[in-house]
Image (cartoon, rainbow over the protein chains, first blue to last red):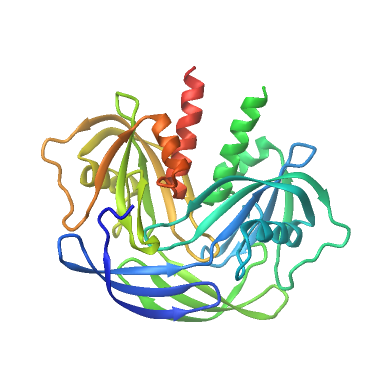
Length: 182
Length: 182
């Protein structure tokens, strides 16, 4: 898998934050020239497709500072040190939605922006879901829960309220599952 | 769309690079507390689903420094100053694949990582494609072209050679289109 490998000549760490780390690497290209690469390291994240017994998708509305607006997204969260994706998924599901589930089926994994970041998202489907009596919620997290039908989800895409990769992917996945059921 | 808006109290620009800019914003949360947000600004990108007359998908294999490995991806590229997404798409298509097309159909747009970045990807499908005689290619870009069947694309996903959001989305889109044709 090392086609056109770029050898690191020098790494400069510009920023080491709470969520991301920024490096600028000087690299040697396959033709011997040098270039720079701006690299955002990220711990990775999980996201959960959860469909209720009423055939509704659970979405979380939250403000996204990089966009200066709020989005409707499937529940998600970044992985804490050493956590498995499944552990993160169960924790985030309870914190953000008050639901838990008996099983998490892996649906897909993907790098979100391989040109400048190593963020990898693991997408699961929650099976056999149930409400938690006194869910642990996270302080200072401002969320509004929504449960939407398939048709409502399509409208939210048209309105650009659903507008991020993992959620758009999830709706497409739901579309295929619904078609297969018929 | 301003649910749970976070007011910017202070912005510090940490890095202003060739591709990304990194800000750290101090924000006021809806409960009056303050917090920090790490924000990666990106000019946005386009990606193109191109299927040949032989029903094969055109993929570009390239090294991705943030991952220290190469991936197979649909043709893509970031938007240059003031370009429309369609202009970027036509330019990147020719530079990366040597193809052009008569029409670009918008398929989907999505933010790749709304938690920390404003990168927005516009996904098009190229229609009525044709080979360019002497395509303009970009210097210092190291790519290998592949044209793969649907079954080969699924194998590439299993092998984690196709492993990024836009390409995984594109394969799912292709799956639905194939099912609708039947």
